[in-house]
Every structure is written in structure tokens, then in C-alpha cells.
Length: 96
Image (cartoon, rainbow, N blue to C red; front, side):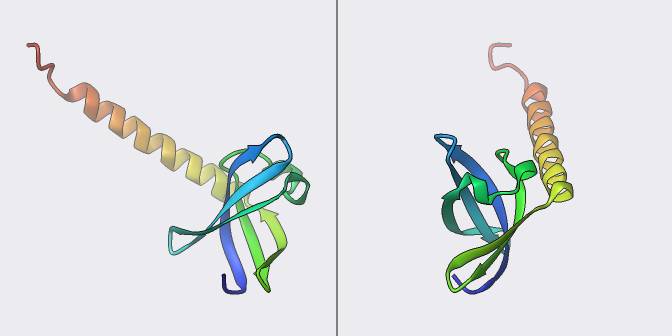
């Protein structure tokens, strides 16, 4: 991975010890990094949290929690689910 700052999403926490972070560029996952959960800022230790992840020499050098982006992504995901649910409920039953 090229040095720089990426958007990272906390995908999951394994055994309460390891944070699995998906690194994105151009809205696509480019890499996955497994790091000790202690390296993630306390307020960002929830699945789906958005992080700014700085990579230097293939190592994660800094992680910053992005609360506004986290909230926006969660709202966008909920809106997509709501629209999908509405479309599904509008389809006529095949039994009718």
C-alpha cells in the first residue's frame, strides 16, 4: 500500500483484542489491516466507525476517529435499508 492517509472502517473486533480495519480509496476496499484494539481511539471502537488512517512504510502510523463521517455513513446505510424495505412492501403478492 502506498504511503498516505486513507479512510478506514472498523469492520469488526475479534476476541475483544484485534481490530479489523478495511482501508478504502476511491470508495473501494484496498487493504485490510488487523491491529491491536488499543491502537484505535476509544470513541472509535465500534463496528462501522470511520477512521482516518495514516500509513507510512506499510505500517499504520496514526489513527483518528471521524465521528461526523461515522454518523453520515450510518444514516446513509439506514436510508438505503428503508428505501429497500419500502420497495419490497410495494410489490404485489404473487398469491393474489
